Image (cartoon, rainbow, N blue to C red; front, side):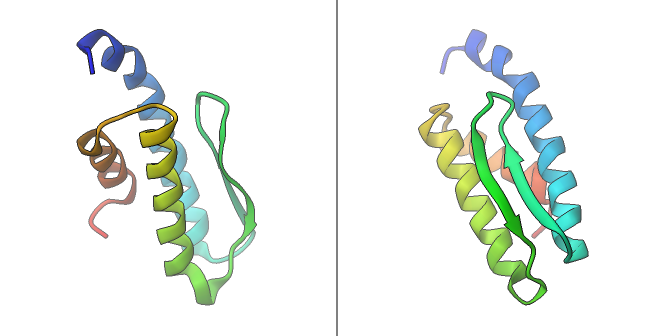
Length: 92
């Protein structure tokens, strides 16, 4: 991907990482509902109730939805997606 395009997408990726971290906190709290929208406007995850007994599965589902969106819609490399997920979810 050309450097210019990466520079244009960087602020959106930083915003997405911040949104994912906030969402992860809600998921870890185990209550309410979670939803995630990309800075591009696309819904990555529609509103979904948090189920404490399925928290790990929901986290995995969230990761796969983010990866699918970034790889498919934004055509980001696997490495870039890995960096976004690593920054978002930490050492999981």
